[in-house]
Length: 143
Image (cartoon, one colour):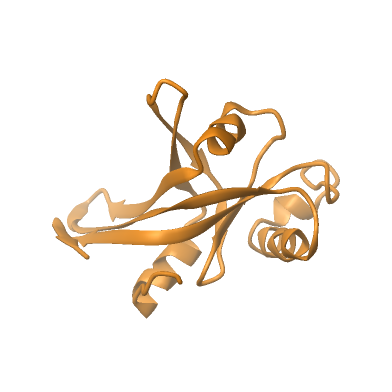
């Protein structure tokens, strides 16, 4: 199980503060929005407000796509990205929830504050199990 990203791809995905998540509505319309993820080298996790359309969409169809990309506006030859397809699962509590919550707090100190923090069970964490990926750099797609 899992995908085989290069060490450079893993570092790239882990360092970016935001990625874009794609889900689909009941009518199969794609919806893309930013999320603030952590990647432990195997799974992607992000927190979500409890009553959002993305959670309903994930419950109806757990197949998702996330894109991590970056570039230098002065040098487009440095364009780099990784698109990961996977299956999403909504976590509300338990050991894996606690593990993901600790990773999120470590990467995003805002989650440690009274205003930005939360307790187990108050806010869901979405776990994505990657199934496939594609990467691109300098305008070239690679599998």
